[in-house]
Image 1 (tube, each protein chain N blue to C red):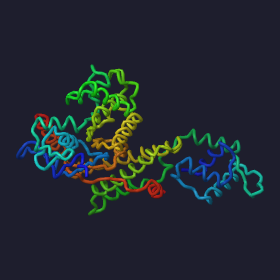
Image 2: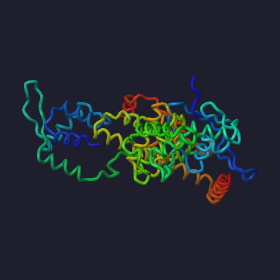
Image 3: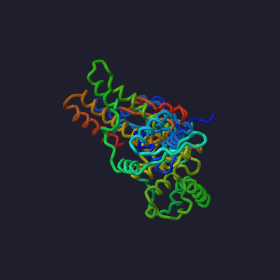
Image 4: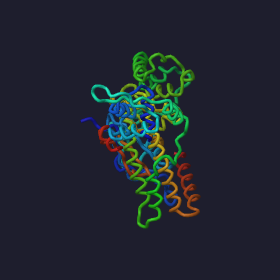
Length: 192
Length: 240
């Protein structure tokens, strides 16, 4: 997540002080990506250098209010107009971990998958409890749902990995035998 | 102390014999207390449906004990089992299973009437149950005049009407869009928060997230369980 665009988006609402930007950022994203004040001021300095925000006069308390410039507005619009692509995101540690696990002798990959699934599900339950709290604003609700859908995708992918691993461990021809046994079981069950 | 709504002790179910025997469940232990929502997840053939059928007394365990509200199903006569099913267990299915020629309130009142509750009283209880699932103004609609989400709400009202303590839900959101599915889960959750117990079979992780506990089944056995123990603040701190 780019702090740069986060700050520009907040400044598009109204000019703000640095500490105010930090608070607003936390409120909007439900503290999912907390910023420290240092990050805020460093980013503001860069945005000012690039002409995307302008610092106002210091007030009596020595505070400076920042405002978005036209160049900043256009940069922000471009950000909203451009889809996020996978290469912009950090590398997926879990995918890399599993890819390596299948190559290292003695690693119980199915157990790695199951442990991850239970852990991801626990996170899902925690997020769902937050959702049940129900007093979040619309922005926070959208962020929560984004995180829940990402966890859901991860669990579906883990289910898929488990199936692939099981087939690989049975070897060729096992699929048909397994399917025949399952079909027999279903028939027997249905007869009852 | 109140008995668990559902208790399964070392339950196995084997279909067929000898070489053709298929172990649908193997030594399963599962307890669901009043107020709890427990989700069961697992791939096709892992034993989810068998588990629900045994919990609802629609199938018999090959070994082990299944108790509903403290009563062991294996020790009951057929008629006593039928009574227990009517009074203690409610079902929610993927395709709602409402009777098309009955209105919403008549559908909800039906299990009570089958249990010889007087019609007026049954209808009154059904109206309360429909109000509780947010269908206050729609009591007299026929299922065809209701949306999928509303029909599933009627089904949930039917499952809990008359104080039945155990709801068995088999993919209740399977036919619904994402947002409506969430609303149905929120409703099931709220029924549990009011004291019902529910066993939810689902393949959707986001919906299982509403449960207090999530049980993972593989090849007829529980391989793991997920349950949240963190406070929301601690969880968010962990995410950072």
